[in-house]
Image (cartoon, rainbow, N blue to C red):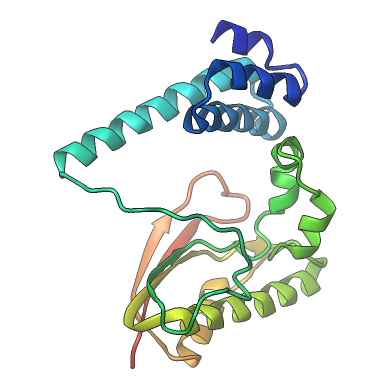
Length: 229
């Protein structure tokens, strides 16, 4: 850890080279890469001390892993196979009626500029930030046009969710209403109405307090929809 700390402020290439020497296990390397990216975010967004944040994030991540292992053993859970794919929710490359369940937390309208919010981490990982901004839901456009573009993008995403979900299965959406220029943007109401218009049935709406975004959001909603025949 001492060697890692001494290289934290070096270029990302030096840091990643050090991680490669530390372990050949991709899981271990990704663990330390994530800890550094979290520290980058804490430093740039919250002005927290970089090294202290790095160490704190490692501790929290280790605690989370220990909790996960404890729960897994206590409940005798068997892990399934996981496949992660990068795609576009507006054009999902899956057959009709092929998915057993959907859980998603889409962008909260224009509550956050998701690109600017994590720009240091995105650049650190080598992403083309300008290209991402043109493709990302919720960051294209300005003011009113940004909200309109968001709504149109989410309509496409919700329609794709309906298409790929099997009948009588559930889709869970975590979403909230943001405040922009003193006006509340009714994203929850928009989502509920459109989902019902395309054939979903809202079976439960759970209110949940959200922490850390009080300037734009105070709560979020967990919307549980069922695709009926």
